[in-house]
Figure 1 (cartoon, rainbow, N blue to C red):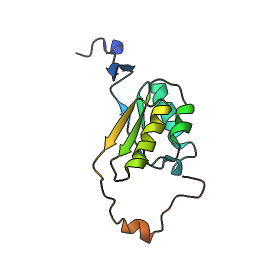
Figure 2 (cartoon, rainbow, N blue to C red; figure 1 turned 30 degrees about the vertical axis):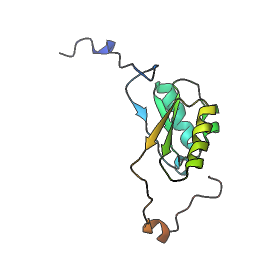
Figure 3 (tube, rainbow, N blue to C red; figure 1 turned 135 degrees about the vertical axis):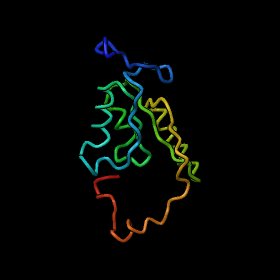
Length: 131
């Protein structure tokens, strides 16, 4: 039992790319609300750890800025919500493709946004410096 555990190798291959372990960073919205470096800091940490990072459709860092801010490996993935605005979806897909993102993570669990009454009551909105 527990012999040779220091020689373990968790690396695997996903979509033809070797990653350090079978873990990835899932898409998270509005990360720059928590820290000025937001998505860029998390994506850099993912690259240092050798795992995939998935940029949220509702990120506060652009697809291009994130791609330019970190090493090219492991590759970036882009989240895409399935919505009625197909032209907007095509723009996101093209932008991700042009900037070297390797995969789309399709999110289908939220086809309609709820009323979000607490958000309206509390007047929650992004600060003007974030988009």
